[in-house]
Image 1: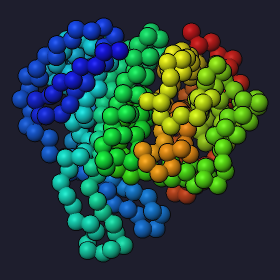
Image 2: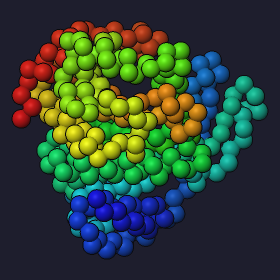
Image 3: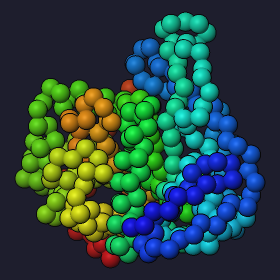
Length: 353
């Protein structure tokens, strides 16, 4: 993997990850004005959750026609000026978090109970291929490996930002999920706080030494394993929330992508693509999903959390979508209509192609 850095005309960073050396980046001809993001975080005093407020994101690009795709190389609206690329990563033009955001008052309305601080993190877009019509499932294993190496490189670099507490790589796929661009891509959020989900995991892991080892051991001995290799296991968790939900976990306790060794990355490229293909084969149509890579915090609690994938879909049948009911949306009390054992059996039985 060969990394080449460049700058877009508004000052945002663009990084190419190529499988061959020799790239000389093309200058961005658009003459964009400097980015002036305003990202603030407010803390809910009742739950302790952080809520990010970013008014500028309301004007972000939404499902443009193919000839206006900002992720296709070299086009009039492209964020990537070169005429081709393998994997490209750039700072989001409409970020939820940005280190350049100005200072904000420490409270809302002057009330100490309403804590507020700048959303001084970073948001990046990861383009998996320059082919607008492709998908991760259609890429060669070598390209999936390049994506993994890019995730690892970005995780290491973003973790060094002083204000960043956690790095999250993810892919949203399908209009049902709410994607705003069809081009195959994912995102990376470098949060200036630890997310609510990770805070709960940290609390559980601090009370249960060896939690991830025990979970993986129990899942590997059970009936919900979908795929297993020398270094990774994919399984439907015993308490799955979604009609399609799969976790992919390394056998070794590593905090993030950057800590994976060569053998682990090689196997992950194969198993991850296989898993995605099985998901698409479930209903004989591309599955809408969120594929999120949970990584350990950059500071306190880093030794407690193991890197793992949580992939889930809102599709519960070929022609039916799971909508969150009041119990789930309002109270986070989940109800799953598909037994996890049934979901695992279906994923094992389908042909990955």
